[in-house]
Image (cartoon, rainbow, N blue to C red; front, side, top):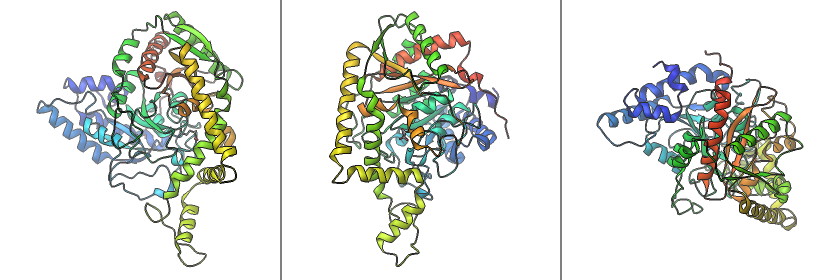
Length: 505
Ligand code: GLN
């Protein structure tokens, strides 16, 4: 099999061929490294490629397989990891100058689990600085390009992971989602992205943005691949005090069951507040068509109202900056990465911090630190942070009421397709609106998935979001896999096969 073909396989297919001895992990890993060398100059999905480390893991897996060892299902399948996940000895910047040159002395739990399962880590992917953004343009190291149209954004903050998977640079990737950073990039690149239930995947070793909202999850080309990866990284971790001390539901089983395309008896709730005005016509049209497919598969479609979702974006932009301003206080020029000597007087601790933070943080990060410290200040705490927390409770109640009427909820993932690079860079509010449909799930801690849902009138991909109650992530996989099967039957091929071929270097 040629190197190109190896990069086109789904992770499940590649895993099957590895297990059958048809191909080695070294060959598969090298094929992806070659693909990165050929297209990443144009896509810029990676901040750091670790060819040596990836090939060492691949060789080790191949040797263990040859020795007849029992290996994990995904052993030998290479993966890309968002640069906010700590990787021992591998640069980890979170897209920020302030962490340039920092080499983590430890592995995140996710990293440990990937290593233990034998997945070669190809490298670290580009992202908006500290995961603040919806376009990857806030990365301190240059933006990532959408493989569907290199003049457009790949979504954010995890645009690097989504673009790497969409451009066949990696079959699998890890993202993190605080307000939509896995799902929205998935939607605009035609890939699958899953934000697990809060507490379902360990946060140990993720550089924190907003600790009560952050969740890491899979970015892949198929629903089954996400389920396989989710089972590798998920499950209880004593190192994260918010980790759920229960086993994950059977995700791979649910994906396989869903792939039959039968949804008899499943109640699918359409959220009134997540659609309509402000959503691009093509996004709405594809959504309506998919509802018909779900109905045809036996699902019962019900309309549900979540009235407080209207306030989700506002509450999020008080809670997130508040938590972020506190989490980012540790970047002081003393402990990690960058240190800038002050020019305005002797190097007191305060001046070093000011000089380092002034030079090391980008504008969006500074904007949110100022917002957060303001919202938390004594005189305004009740009016802003306190009120936002109350709204959060109301949103959780909306979800509880909706899930009494429906097994899953659905909406478009993002209101529009990928916009042009630079188009919203000077308009923070316009940028924030990209996550209007994804943020409620983070505020309530419920899981969400974005599934490729066809092309809008502009020929660019759109996503359909599925939401489930906390700890019922298996429902995402059942419904997601069913929809994927039904849609691919109408398209005749996976959506990504319609993306233009990238020029190779
Ligand atoms: N775009 C949202 C923000 O800027 C979401 C970010 C995320 O999920 N990390 O906050």
